Amino acid sequence: MRILQFVFAAALTLVAFVGAQAHSYRVGEIQIGHPWTRATPPAAKVAGAFMSFTNEGGAADRLVGGSSPIAEKVEIHTMEMTGGVMKMRPLADGLEVAAGAKVELAPGGIHIMLIGLKQPIAEGDKVPLTLTFEKGGDIEVELAADKMGAGGKAQDHGSHGHGESKKTDHSTH
Ligand SMILES: [Cu+2]
Image (cartoon, rainbow, N blue to C red):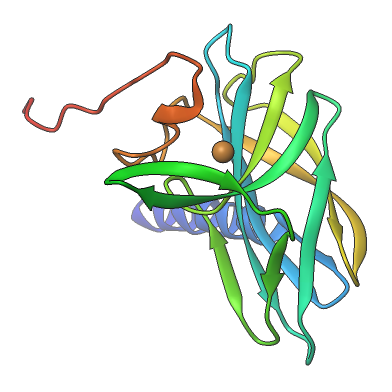
């Protein structure tokens, strides 16, 4: 019985591993790791998209834009402190990924923004997103939708104007 349990656990681990491995993409010299987003409230007009870019080539490339069938437009945003307040700002020249560098897009930091959502995102959805790199060209990825507020930090997306401010209460045990 113990051996069976072990085999079962090992098989599950393998499935999880293979699943995680499969969720990456490559465009030109850029490796795109685990693109994800979050479920949105019904009336939400924006959603953030997060992933990592690893440049395995010898020259810089640049994410210059994107599009998604569920959004009117897609922008690349950075977060900046302005007068003590964290605000997002579109990166007009796109996002450079230097040779050999890894850039992480995450809640509270650089992110891709889906603007003018045509439908809410539900947990478990696979949201198509096409990314355009200056050298590598276009690649379509699938954003895996995590639960609402997943991976959020205090400053995360609260200023995006969709009125939802879900705060995690760490004091309840
Ligand atoms: Cu944003």
